[in-house]
Length: 336
Image 1: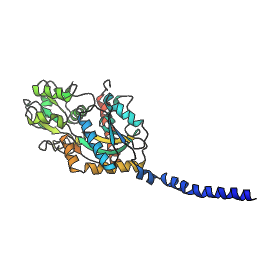
Image 2: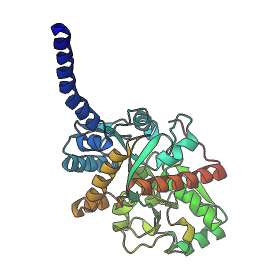
Image 3: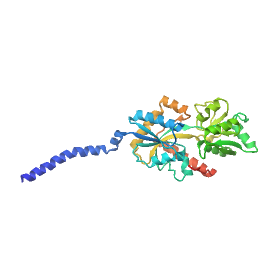
């Protein structure tokens, strides 16, 4: 009898000890507790291009500021290749716990139409924040007798042969913007492909090609030196680097306001909402910092800093727009 009582007492004591542990475990399993603990280890930020370019510089700036905001190191991993798809596919396949992120760009919404192995921008990723828009600028050789968009389009329509336009790859932002331009204005350009904006601009300056649509930051030295003439910029607002150059919308093509490249922060699909909000709020604060904004502008990017829902809506619109253009223009992907 005493043995049974003793055993019963032991069971009660064990139960009393276990209850607080179980309660604590239940609390830790709540979403709020997960949010409070995040992040408790380093975060990986993947960049789909090699070190040294504008995308890499933007990614490292964002990573540095996220470290300050979240208190955990942000480890930059450059996984270049396949037009950004190597890094994008790695992030899409990662655990959606907020510890593997991607600095993405416009290729996220064009690649799926061009490459079979590209991931879907809405189904395979979680939007966190749209960081910035990256405008392109129409530049022409100074000897071309045009000073604004009306004159350029007038010359394109009256010329016996199409004006030539230097592009930097299939479905690159400049190529897509030029495709939109010729369709909206009912003109025809002859595309001349180049390996990069440097060689393309060199041939515009030399007069071998009539025009090009590089990023503002790539074209800025040539514009300031007078070696090319700026006609109009893409995007919804004038570039802070070229405040005297009108947008395409201001120049009469109202439906081309949003035809810019961009940078954004995403993670794998199905990330916890609380972690997405934590990251999004941190990025919004980062993008409101005057020093960060100035550094973005110096790299030719106009700061935005949106929340997750705003970025998701933007990506959906961009994905639809470029899909329609790729099909209408029969644009094919190059070997990645």
